[in-house]
Length: 119
Image (cartoon, rainbow, N blue to C red; front, side, top):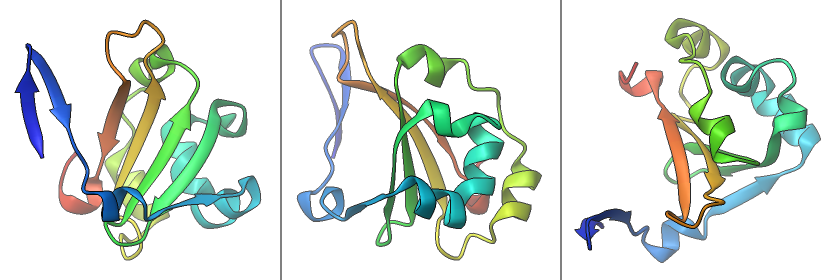
């Protein structure tokens, strides 16, 4: 559910979807999604990613980084490189997120989904 309350934008995920996030070890992330993660976060992604999770129901890859500024400073990745690195059969979107340290919001995020035509 998406809404606005007190001038703030909010998103509520249904519990069944939110609980289907599967944490990946660094090895699993590198083997399965290393190319995609590197295109988005850069070659030093292992130093930036605090956690990598996948939801096989919604086909989303979630990458948590340390700070909102890391999320904000991400360059727009090449959609054609992302599509070349993965065919979209297992993941259709990538969320990069961080906890908001100022407390104004709970988190900040960016979403990349060239497999859905979002470039």
